[in-house]
Length: 366
Image (cartoon, rainbow, N blue to C red; front, side):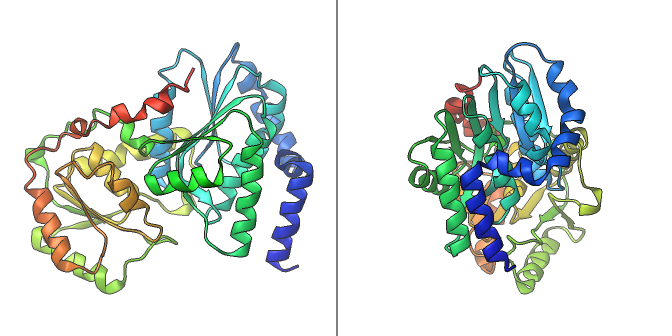
């Protein structure tokens, strides 16, 4: 069966049965194994609780940083917190049996609203379709659907599922996604806040006199736009600053997956420590820029394929040590931006005042 037709039939089945029922019928063994594995976790918590779902098990350190920042924010609540990662199919039966109407549900943020990372959206749809009587909050996301027939069909399905939920709150992490969400989901509460990692404070405490070297943090995946010639040009620029520049990344090899919550947290803390020792970062990764911002590290950010780096930079444009160049082939602009950020007198992240921007989100945490 052609993939397009198969996808269309799957969407129709979801419409008729509901996403959670459709998923449970397709994967009964996973549902039962998950019930046996996770029941005890749910039973150990008494009274109203907060539940964070869909946290990453894959190897993107940026998304693990998102989960860490979300946990830090939710841990400010007096309620106990239950955090679960990965495919929500495995916890569907537990959610149905153990979640009370007083529990609040939180879905992890990131950059996966759309069909580029469709599995992640399907995990959310399972929860939203199942827990119609709970408050559900989607942490800050980037929304990106293309114009293909299949993508638009899937978008329409999410509109029906989201729109049918009476207490669903959606947060966009930049203006473009905010406008897209408001248009696509007019029946839901949609608000604008920064990427959740920008709520992290106190990581810009490294001794600047001991910083050295240049880090190049570049994409090598579906969101990559940089050509080989541009990469070589940037390497030459970096070598002019420090001949021993080095590459780093905010992902690790997929052979290490699945990544546990504790492993993910350690990967994030280690990466922040690496950034704290750099004199300069050049990156086309969103969280390469954000990690630089929260650690007080001068950074020049370049845009990626879906523009989310540039969109998120709007929150950081007043930080003198963070620069942005839209065109990765523009050598003159890159050199100028490097000069500006390296001459910045202040690398105080708190000066951005972003902690005040999260008010609409914090008020929804019981």
